[in-house]
Image (tube, rainbow over all chains, first blue to last red):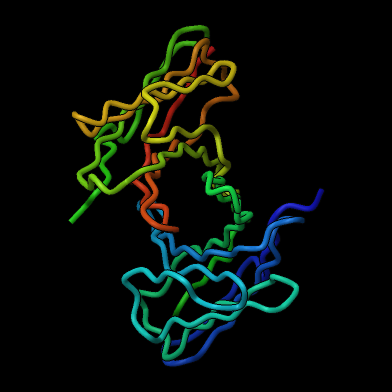
Length: 116
Length: 110
């Protein structure tokens, strides 16, 4: 049973560039969330995608955008990179439970993004 | 403004004893509370959760307690094992978003 997979594992960019990170959800999951984890901090919610639409967004600027594809995989795009965007970017997937009960999010191992 | 606080950055416990990790929150809209553990170079792994309608949930060696009036939850690990050494995150949920604390690094010594 494949878990959440993210690519690439590491990435180095320079200020002002653009980056795309990719995520494949756990088999059977239909919802994808993205988080940013800075050094020494807990992960911070960026946004969540369901049915190819962004349905909740955290406190991140418009430079952060995303997409979900029909096969439920997702991309996170960040434009005009800043030094402060250096972080571990985590993808999490879950299954929408139509009975209304909460289902935990399952995380990938992340993409380490370094901005020079 | 931190909505979720884990006030102990680190905790050291002897193997076989109880580990107690604490978490305080300020947002009364949180209705689902999760604990994750994280090993270096890996993503967070879901451990245990509790709904706001309960005050206790148990899964093997792990028990989570929720005190809604005090806005406090705790994770108990009994007995602690060396393999439990990891960073533990408290993550209450609001809407679809998990709100993580900064984590507590647990070290279980033989």
